[in-house]
Length: 299
Image 1 (cartoon, rainbow, N blue to C red):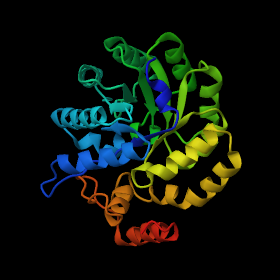
Image 2 (cartoon, helix red, strand yellow; image 1 turned 45 degrees about the horizontal axis):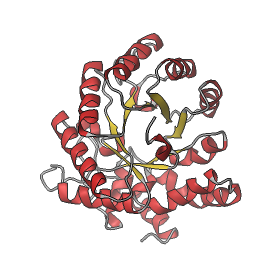
Image 3 (cartoon, one colour; image 1 turned 60 degrees about the vertical axis):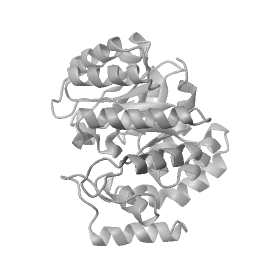
C-alpha cells in the first residue's frame, strides 16, 4: 500500500506534552513533532506512550490534526500513524475514520483491553475496523497491558484475508511467537518491534523496524541503529544494542511513559507532567535514569 515502505525503520511513539492544567500543550507538541521529523523518524500520535488512555476522543482528534499539519509542512513527508484502537469496536472505527478523513497515512490498532475477547472475536473486531477504512492498519499486540494475547494464527489469518492489514507491532516479549508470525505471514507483512530492547532480535529474524519509546529522546541514534540492520551491518548493530541496552531497560523501570517523560524533561525536550493515574518516577528511579543518561553523555 502507498507509503508503508517508510515504516521500515523508526516510528516514534510520541510522548504528549501537557501544560500546568494538564491540557495538551499545542506549541510544545508541534515543536516536538518537528524535532522527530528533522531527525529522520516517522511519527505515531496517540499511542500508549502518548497517554491515549487518558485522552478524550476530542483530544485524540486535536493531537491527530496537529501531527498531520506539521507533517504537511515538512519537506521530509513523514508517515503519520494514528493510534485509533479502543476496547469498543465502534469507537475504534470512529477514530480510524477520523484519521482517514484527516489525511493520516495509517492506523495503529491495539488489541481491545479489559474485555478479553477470544481469538475469533478478535478476528471479527479487526476485520470490522479494516472494512471501515481504506488506510493501512498495523495491529498492536501488547498482552501485558490488554490482558489478551493476539495469537500467531490469528495474525496470520488477518494478514492473509484483509489487504489493508499490513503489519503488526509486537510487544509480547515472546520471541518464539514473533518468529511464528514472521514465518506464517506474507513476505511483505511488516513485523515491527514494540520494545526497544527486542528490536535487534526481531530485525535479525526479518522484522523491519521499531515503534520506539527511546527515539523520543535519541531519535537520530535509533534511526542509525535500525538503519545499520536494514543495511546488514550487524556488527555495528550489535555494538549499538549493547551500548543502548541499559537505556532501553531503564525507560521501563516504571510504567511507560513515566521514565521517558522524566528523561525528556532533564534533557530539555518537554516537562514530565502526566495525567493520573500515572505519576512521575520515584526519586530512587529518577536517579537510575539520570545515571544511565549521564553514562551515555546525554545530560
